Length: 284
Ligand SMILES: CCCCCCCCCC/C=C\CC(=O)SCCNC(=O)CCNC(=O)[C@H](O)C(C)(C)COP(=O)(O)OP(=O)(O)OC[C@H]1O[C@@H](n2cnc3c(N)ncnc32)[C@H](O)[C@@H]1OP(=O)(O)O
Image (cartoon, rainbow, N blue to C red; front, side):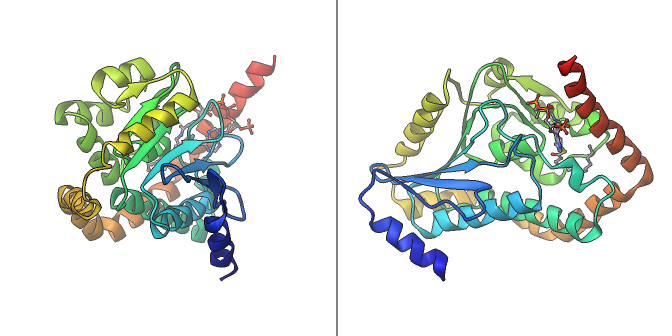
């Protein structure tokens, strides 16, 4: 209630860029009054690891942007090196059972909200985007990336089977053969490789340019009837959405069984440690 009152006040404010930031600030929303486009920024320090709260916040922000009839949604990060490090591994290592369940449900919700989003969506990938980071980038309809970053689904490299929504995203973006190979090999692509295979649409040298490119992409729909555009998008995605709904419960149980497996726990512990060790080595 307070929140919507606050929002309506902001909407009347005559600023060029109005902020609809959520109270927790794990994501922020800025709506450009000139273009009507909302920029949704991931803002969980240090690397936008997707924990329950960030995913919950993301869901709320996506809904807020849709409800406020923005003309489009641009997803980006406040970190200038990392778009998102993917799922927060700490939520999966020696997990709290209820939180682990919630984590997966919230991830499914975010995917669903973006995959079926009424608005045109674009990702300004201003840093590394492994696994869940790649999921957020490829669920959007357009991607632009900064140089010297990496993107991809590295799950099989970690001994994990990527869930079906990773496959849906890749099949929307890449030729089937490339999608299958990348997912089954757990390939991580440099920015340049990603551009070459079509995983990203463009490469630019700054975040500002990335946001401009995303705005231009969304503007290509300016003269298209919004309802027709949205229904055409839904039509293309209907079969995937149907399959997702059919398999959603099973997908959740598979995730829980997977992370609770002793071997997976052991692997996760080693992997988390190696990430921490990397920092220790850098400090030497
Ligand atoms: C692995 C088994 C998972 C089992 C789950 C099965 C479910 C299948 C579903 C598949 C869908 C999604 C899966 C995922 O998203 S799993 C996450 C995969 N992500 C990664 O492998 C990324 C690993 N991180 C990196 O490569 C780098 O950190 C970075 C993102 C390139 C950033 O590099 P940086 O140099 O800027 O920062 P760095 O010093 O490495 O990290 C800072 C601190 O953050 C910690 N950390 C890094 N990544 C994660 C993470 N994903 N979750 C939690 N914590 C992370 C890192 O250890 C540093 O911590 P500290 O400061 O040393 O304490």
